[in-house]
Image (spheres, rainbow, N blue to C red):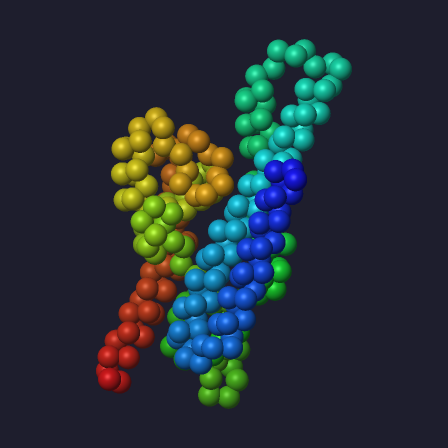
Length: 230
């Protein structure tokens, strides 16, 4: 079995596992807060698999172009193969998009939208969340899931985006990692082909910072309310 066939087969197995996970959430999570937290975990996991799937497709496209180039009768035969491969990889349109909802994998598991969960009205302060009023409750159609730092495995609170591969990191963690690794630092996201991670490639993501801050504030208020109820 070819490498890409094995990768596709493994991704199919992952999709089936994610579908089972989603089904278990819907069938067993009666508490809305617990359900929302589990759906956030599922969403983050699906995003990770979408990134892997995207990298596989980008690599496959780059290798196909490289093969065509090397078999071109007009080719000089003295090209730098690694340089050509990296060039094709960077130019591939698949590598530059971060729209998870367009991913076939996302559509298979999430269905193009997050599961609808009932939330209290005070959560409406999260700007990117759309609400529809239904009686005394609200329906949340797009639940914001805070990004998880690939190194510390904790919620990112000071997001910095890589201008090259578009991945987001916790600034303190990634800056320490780059300093420790020096010229050998690579993007820590699984499947990412960015093998030259530099501090100069990082830019602060202000919009994401606002979303994360609002999310954490909302979570803190919920925790405070829970303590008051106890």
